[in-house]
Length: 199
Image (cartoon, rainbow, N blue to C red):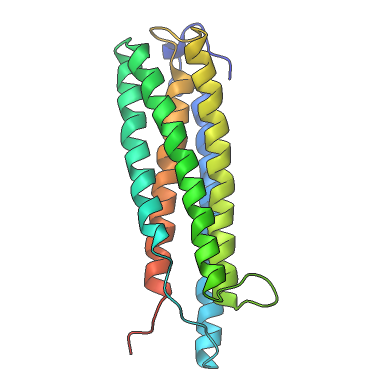
């Protein structure tokens, strides 16, 4: 992503405006998916056909990983704002590693679900299909976030950034923090709408 010579001359930088439009589209996507989930659950509960099961324990760990990654990234952003781009490289590099750990953890969670008979596709229930779809679509956005991180990290290594030229760094952090908040929302949503029935 190209940087403007004077990033402070905008009320809102065009790149930031485009990013927020993209974020809004993602919110609408997941809002639609979770709404469809609730409707499907309501219809199947009326027929006593909804399949209850507990979330894999691995998802608790991946939630912790994504939270820690956001903290590390913010340390990197703070460094960039102070002109300490070495700290920024470290923060972004560690965040990228944590993002990979998150994805590996999600794969392990899917393997755990499969081993417990929680399947995707024709052999699975609506509940399990939604679980796979929500986590997979979020995972694809994490991959996009990792690509963004990689591009910014390359820019940090090659000396692309400097004082007053950190819009891409801030945009990358905004997107990653959003993905973290989105995952926390999804995780809490699944905890409240899935698992063993209370009654």
